[in-house]
Image (cartoon, rainbow, N blue to C red):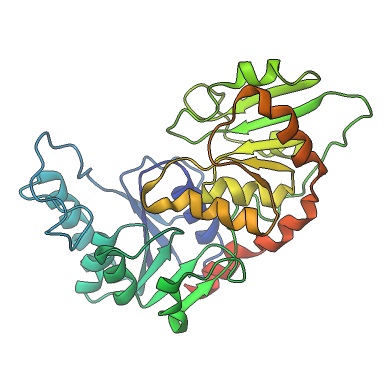
Length: 323
């Protein structure tokens, strides 16, 4: 049995866990505060209590050693108790964390081998150094030749760079060719919990001959099956979350990438990788409407086959083999 902790923020951690666990050769249990609907590849789902619902918070970082472990928080106590009970009952061979320093440290203290999913950015603070040091193995879901940060190089002997993990790995990309003189189809991929792409109306008006569709975010449509829209877009506008970037890479579509603010410069770091490798048109923040015609033209002039460098094909299977 493998334990797999899934962070409740957004959808990307869950999508990655489902992709990886579909390739595991042994059963896996998901432990998360998320509601995980079926179908899914997990043998069992353990719903964890939330640890961020208290009105007052005292000493949440344990004097800088951790990210979140507030004093006298009933939710935190119940959460860790549930994890400990599952470990005692299931006796897992290993435990994957995506991501939590506190869960990684706690499970390791219970004597279980721990695999930590690394994230891009400036992960040089004390809690991240602790998690990476105690990890029995580290998985980085991006290509090593595009980004090998110093804080991971010190753990090179126990780090596997598997490439970007897309939930659509193995799905055929049914690309619709652009018609001569036809409209340019622009697809905005918003995050599960942000307002990315809220200025789309002004942008569309500034770009004659285009149609704009928004999926996700606070104002966009939601679909459990966005693959046809991703494949059918002429240009995709997306934030720099790991799952969204991997999905665009799998479809090999021209893209404009705009990193959203995230802790530890996670998305800015991913965007910098894409810019250096010339995989996408990258801008630092949402542009004024007048800039969009030129940005779309730049994206359309790019070679989408360069997305091969993101190494998405087989990435989830490589992660599962590593685990």
